Image (tube, rainbow, N blue to C red; front, side, top):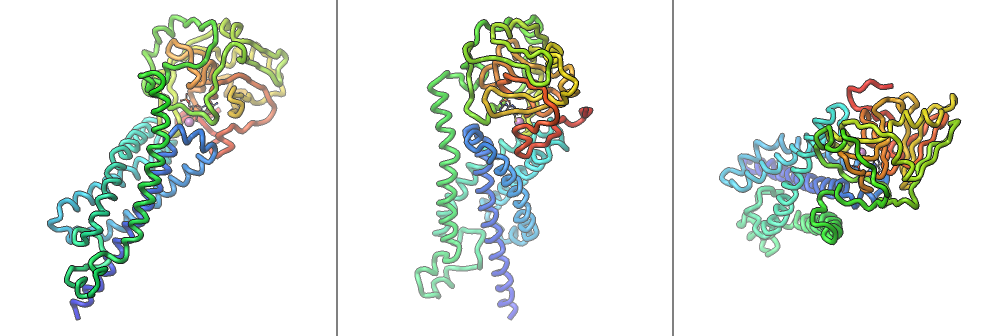
Length: 422
Ligand SMILES: Nc1nc2c(c(=O)[nH]1)N[C@H]1C(S)=C(S)[C@@H](COP(=O)(O)O)O[C@H]1N2
Ligand SMILES: [Mo]
């Protein structure tokens, strides 16, 4: 009697482990694919605003991952006992728990980036990426080795019931030797995982690798290449070259919502118009003659990366506004990108902050087309989605304009934590 009921309890517990494992596996698969898609520049262009939804899905799935993890932890003591002597499987459990813990904690910091601030978000992004590059191969390896274990049920640590060869044989069928229940789902899972995983990871990486390897050997340094052809080159001020900030620390991830545009003297212009008494328009030769200033500032993206100590050289936005003679009815400044799609805005008061810069040079060099050159906006006290790349038009307007990413879910309040909101 006692033996029987014990067996029943064990059986129920084994089933629980199997379903925890299955849930965990599917969630991790979804998280891996969506995470890699969020990371890849290739998908960023391809997804467009779908990216915001994907990011939400990724965040929600990450939070949902807490359920199987907590459920497992409740059963862990029991499972651990059953793994007595099975060192490899114990190591596997610890590895998986460490990975999940690392992903979840860093993921929560990235999700709540404003509460934690840029420094913590930088560390969390690094950890999140690191866990991914270490964890993904481990998980792929684990899935593949498990297919081998399928054929040897004794070696598996998670089973719906404590099946032994004896009972299987006593079933009288050969099938009984294998594991009838989870084998199909696991096979299906594996096929989906390997297929989708390979397509998503290798596809775009391969495409990018191809693109890069056909260009410069040092294409990792994205600032080297500049497809813009604008002459004459701007001559850096002494504070820019060598840069008074000592050179930027960190790497820009290249973001765009269109193909990356490039410009030359024939198609580049810059305008200030709208509610102004004095509409302004320049071509490149005229624009490089405008008097510039130099500033050192940090640059923070809400996805967790930052570039510190950038030495930017450009024209303070307030100066351009003064030159244009802003009318009293104007309340906001709208910024247009030469990509034809991206826009953003600041209130008049924000636009007049003395560190808002229409930048032409970075660390003493022209801003490359990939990084938004020849001219991009820099708003150091706000998250970088305000820093419109390929800026070519400034319009003074009455009322608000909701920018590209703000229309798609980014906070209208882009202020960095700790900045005084005006
Ligand atoms: N035209 C344009 N400007 C843009 C963006 C964009 O996609 N298109 N992305 C914004 C975001 S979210 C960030 S973090 C920075 C990234 O700048 P980078 O590509 O030079 O690293 O540019 C901002 N300005
Ligand atoms: Mo960003």
